[in-house]
Length: 187
Image (cartoon, rainbow, N blue to C red; front, top):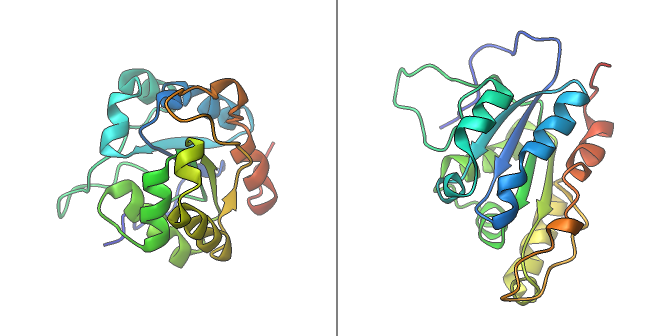
């Protein structure tokens, strides 16, 4: 059920998928998009269905020039995004990390992440979760499995439970720092 396009991206710039999950800081995804564009990437956003309520869809689509994807296409519907040269998952939530590591492909976003391994697409994840979630054994096992799959995991330290926050410590650009050695970006 690949959502990778039939034809390659026509631009000379590499194409970055930014997978956005439902978390309060998702509203700041434009910071990652701007940083990627400044580093000569073209960017398309794939959001989990719940993440759509956390982002300004019109602003993100205007910034990238592409529609945000969150649902599978119907047969014969054109693919609105070029193939990904790399993927940044930011913010990567507890739920998405665990489903991805387990191979549960129940949304377009997680389906793309599950297939990225088979396609050999360099992928970085910037976890954003609280310390109680991070203490759960499934999370630790999932992060280890993703690392074994070659996923590059960011350095965010979980925030206190029931407190939210941590946005000031969330480094959106870290995704690009992790991916750049794996993908040659012109410029």
